[in-house]
Image 1 (cartoon, rainbow over the protein chains, first blue to last red):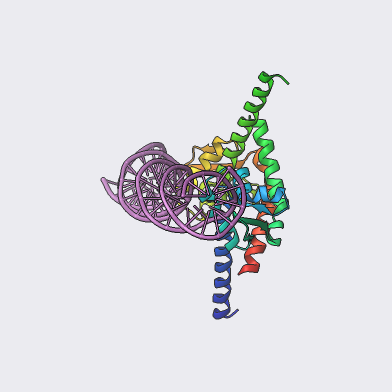
Image 2 (image 1 turned 45 degrees about the vertical axis):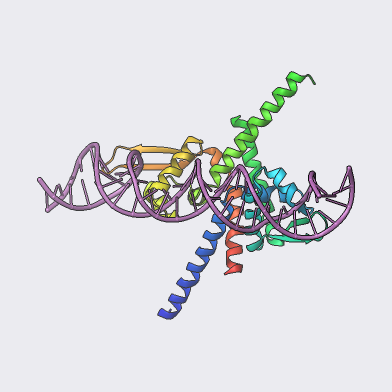
Length: 117
Length: 117
DNA sequence: GGGGCAGGTTACAACATTGTTACAAATAAA
DNA sequence: TTTATTTGTAACAATGTTGTAACCTGCCCC
């Protein structure tokens, strides 16, 4: 393999590693797993206030997380010009693919919480 | 159901919710998923320096995370009186039960990082 | 004596994140 | 006209988290 090829390959790996890190950092933010979980539990579009209620955090944090999820392409945001405003969030296909992992993860968490309680 | 029963039940739920939150907060700490993942990938006991190398973080953070994992009962720490010191970490049975979830989660992460790169 | 090794700990300054409060906008109801 | 509603945003102080640099043990080697 040429040096140029090798460098390109390293750059690619570097890039992939960066993307992996970025995703992990995002998933590790506070309330992120909670949000993905509640949205996964109920496939219907979910409103801001409903997410906030189920996740139990401040508007600011929920808004920040949802914006991050949208920027990463994991949720879609649809605003309706009602009064007062209505905004619905839905998981994208990519996020739905996370469902089995999240289910399994939360099953473990709930089970462990039970046994520790 | 009596009021006393109802109150006990609420207390239990409250306690479980607290435990769930605690676990989620722990799992959401920086490098936590990374550590669990590298330890899950290789079932052999792993030394501090090896974990640090694979996860790529400061000693301080790795030490903090391992201490938290140990306190939560997810890793066991064994120190040997060699010179220089040798310390081995292993996942507990509870943590090993997390394996399928983590595998699945990381599969999703790696796959998504690839497609986004 | 000096240096090196593994596996940390401590202190601290720099940085990141959080919740709170105040505010906005549009309209319908009181 | 005032109030209430939903879905946010902006600013900010308080709090939490991070890495760095210094240090520690115990022993071996030079």
